[in-house]
Image (cartoon, rainbow over all chains, first blue to last red; front, side, top):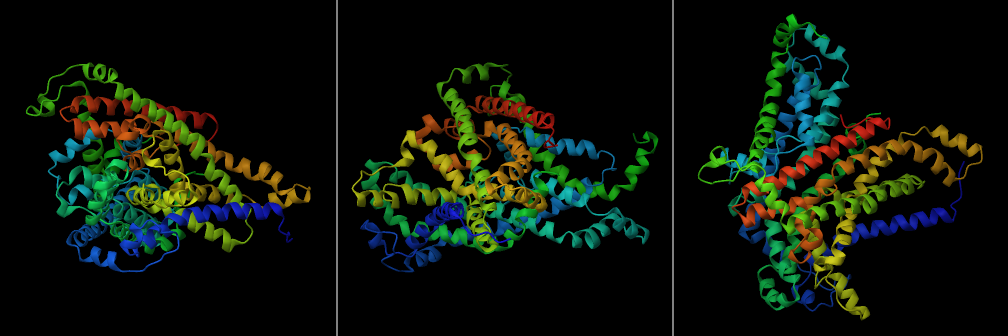
Length: 291
Length: 307
């Protein structure tokens, strides 16, 4: 039965559309600033409709040595980090999905406990220091090797695989590791793909652990570099008395350059986003509420 | 219960599993449990030279010290206020939006809304705060518009009165879409024949929403609400990232939470490892109690808990 649109429909759509515009607007602003001529921006008559176009900011960005290096660091951390994430999480989840394994319940309790209680910042910092991970790529990879949330999602997934599959493989003489890699993983592709993408996004967005443990700027990932760049000038922008000083600093990191950096940092996420979408409902309901 | 005599033999059967789970266990041991032992620092006076083991015990002196600090109570108070604020302002929004989205008939449009709303969730707060400052800063778009209309310029980011509002607003902007998806997924699981039957009985859309959609959502809402309570100490969950990237000394009074307070004490004040750990421990304990209590509450209400 087809209903005709009534006033409620229009009202709802108007509201939803307004929300959509609000969501998009800041991105739009960032985008046009990144392509804008610094002079037009400085004149402060820079409306929402762009009046200039230049690739200047992007040239500056990509020619600057720090940015290229930071991007490279982010790439290394994302690739290596996601790899470690997936290896440890998948193997561990598979093992933990074997309910009859002696000690399994203790291990699960151990995992869940860490979701409720944590040691706090300082002991964490001291631990990393004692492991000699300070100022290494390792500091951005190993302390985040496992997300308890994704681990549980994966365990639940493995639990849903019919045991007959593995049993028949065992009868054919395969050992557990063979079963995992040759049978279980191939049929788990959707879940594995989803979790891989989520981990990858998390690694790409990494800045906190880098900030805590990596003081050497040569190793900074892009997000941390971005943060320093933004905090620098914006700290001045927040204080009206510093406005005069800010115009000098602006020369170092002009608005266009900042926005170009933001765009460049966002691009991988935007590329990956369409793939992520497919897995929203699946990944989320797996982890959230067990019906 | 399992046969005790046979467990060694069974363990041998699972030898490959133990190998597979080993890296995971190493991770948890090293990065989650070892730091917990470092918590004893909360009861010690940290002496750099002597390290954790050698530093002298001081009982609850660290706690007494921090309880006397004004800044600590400010941070504590803010943590609670902001958590409550999030419950009141942020929590209901995805539910409402999901209910509204559910009413959209054209799937293409519905999909488009979902795609648009959810995108900001995947960005880091570094990026989002950068965007926000660009928008709201002294030379930002908002002020340009205000200037245009003749109103005085504002700097919302450094105004203590508006900062919390900004927190809620920006958090919604970033994560509303993600929350909406969760609720939409639950709604999608509702049996359509329920709606058909209601329609034949003459129920209008609003009544259908009230009597079919909402009760089915209720379970999920309750669990998420209780989880949210359980994350109070972390300022409603994930608060640190946002607040840390957005705040500045002008708004500490209203926005400093326990997590950011600990961070500042650790790395700025220095020489206070003992007291900072004490704050962290205090926070963790309350957090733990809240989460366990919240989970029990969920179970008692007949819903499944976290574990």
